[in-house]
Length: 270
Image: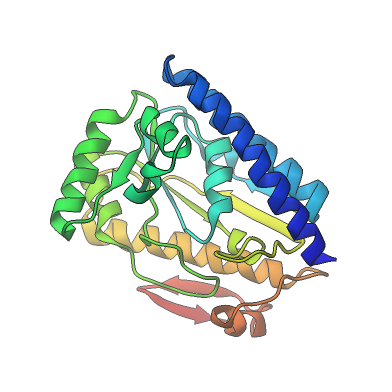
């Protein structure tokens, strides 16, 4: 049954996305507010499809922490789903994306129309400088720069250090930073056909103030975001109908009732 539901969802999802991309193409000659309208409304409709086809519920927590001003948004990265949810709930989000996505017809054109920032490979310092310069010139007065601190998609249960990009943007732009945690990868795994029923939780957390010393900011963001990510994954495993645990999260499933924190890059359990 899960396979059948997943198959139906994937067909409907991509057909639905193509329809909205057609709207985006038609909107390209006009101000970018129309492209933003299309992408935001598409993102808001995806949870409806997930609920009624795959029996996946979406719960958003901490929306009161989202300010209506310029800020850095720092979520953990697991799958395509969190990008959709962030697009639906953030205001004027300026997202970073792999440059290869910019070559996809219609989709890539829309990313460039919205002045999202392509991550261009070519050396660590060169890439970081481009990211910082682009973020400074493209952010709106009340916009939000969204960057994945881990730098790539990380499976449930994994703990990785933060990449230099988020630290560089934090120091260069002098903006507050809002950590975001979720467990979306358990229900919409990367590079997988299956979509597993259950409750996806995304939580916007209290803001980390700007201009903290580098080490303090790095530790605070890492411990806050990763601790909550692991706790939300534990919450999913405690449900009556938990999703299957990937190999990277077997250890977490076994201690799902223990209190867990991450400090100085190390996982502590009680």
